[in-house]
Image 1 (cartoon, one colour):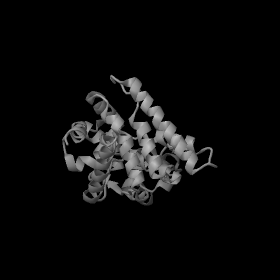
Image 2: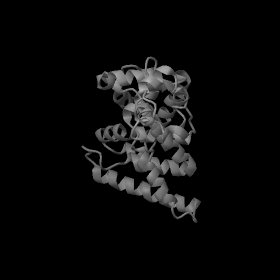
Image 3: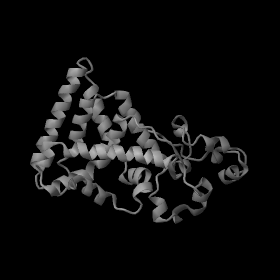
Image 4: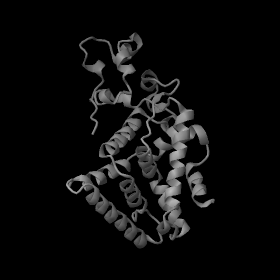
Length: 257
């Protein structure tokens, strides 16, 4: 979707200097200053997309993200059909789909966030260290991951979904019979089909002449499911929860009244 050039710009330059020289000499300053501009992302080199980033205003953004997560859990708990499921199935479904539901919540609330480079993170450092990055550093959000998340949000914003469309779409994602270990998978499958039918009906009611809208909404839902759990956890919640296990926290939010 967002093609990357196969080689860094320095490799194609007729000048004998390498990209390492360009970084040190400042020739790539404009390139680095535009690293988070979506309009230029498709033309940046692969090493640029590996840059680790963090929230520019973590206090404010994490507070907003926490509010979206709380509303997401409240939505899930408010569904009578969900509460009828065995507690193990409830936990499994939430653990599997909390990120897509959270992303839908970000889109529905029109949440915009800014990121910046992680301190001491640079293209030069990644070139020099390469595979030597620690596991902790490897889990940190990257420019490419944030770019994918923003693309999902813009795709949803372009559809301008109504509250009912969001609600039924969340239900269709929540009730996923493909989640392993479900004891009531057939019931979950029927709930997903019910949510999809309701979504299709409300789309037809609100947009009777837009015959392609249902497929576009499903395509957006499929894209949302590609957003990584580690990206969302590290970017929006790690500054608040520290080393607390996110899945344990979600389970606690679901069952502790």
